[in-house]
Image (cartoon, rainbow, N blue to C red; front, side):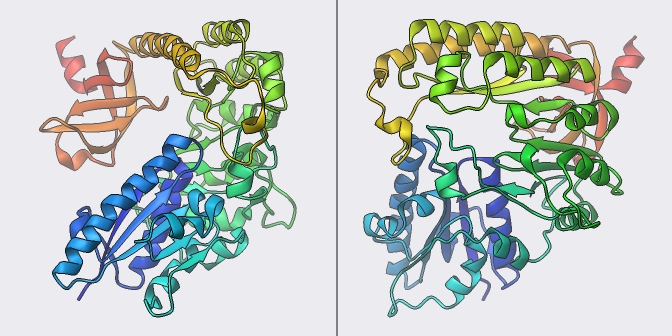
Length: 449
């Protein structure tokens, strides 16, 4: 009888990639994925620890899993519960102590051991936590991936050596590790051969990737992207997340010279105040950040820039926050993500004495998000009346509707037959909101004109 696994993925795109690879590894043993947790023999949650709220969601999810496990037990059905990801790396065996229904816990560098742990699990020998920093082994052990659609994530770099004072990544993902160029190229070809037309290269600090090339010498990201662009069937390349001062002139030139590299970059600034950036241990100031944006826009004038912001960092004053708003007005981001500062245990910022009151953080976040949302809507409205090539990736919410993404990573919805999924279609943009574009086939627009 086929065993079924249900996966709940929380957090970043790297977690989505990790979940896909865990499901691939289990599939090799005959497990199939289900979207219905009540019918799963293995209930899994892949966790995020970047903010307190994200960690709280994990244990709420495990509470629901426990109820399902107990209900299945009353029917004589065995159920395993497994936790993966950064919460395990940060808390270790404390996960098992806090959530007694959990059978297996694996950190983000140890998930290649999941199939063995599941296969050999024995209630008599007890529950188990595996949380080791073994990125090389993880990537080398897993079988070649299979694309599950026309878009795919591909991890090329993991960990971070920057040690921003608020961030847990160095403690949960470890130090920076770059996969070899050949391993990345092989995985990209495997994804393209199984249907991926767009690949998003992932790394906590993706610009610092410096994997060994087939020639035995270190390569850098621009050279890797140049080679990826030669792969048949692969039509779009993206990458995230960038660290501002690690973007080289070669990478900026790549945006100008490589058509398959999409005109979009996620470039987190976090704050518009030099004082706050210094307290965050970010390795740049506002002027340096703006200089990078200027270089990118000179090389590729239509490039869309997105960012991350943290408001209410310890010591942030009203003046500091006003400087953040000024940067937002100057850059005019196409998209952005913004959050209240959340102290994470073990980080230097969590020990700072000048914590900002929650009410102040909430007020500042509201002001910032209102401005960011208005800019995002204004950006999208610029495209009304234009024609954009859109990669159609999934069914929309409305009957007969398909969703996809423009080169600028805008969500676009259109009414087209289901057989167009996976195609890149020229669409005439007819409307825009802050979150999406509406469109019709360009052929219909041209007939009316």
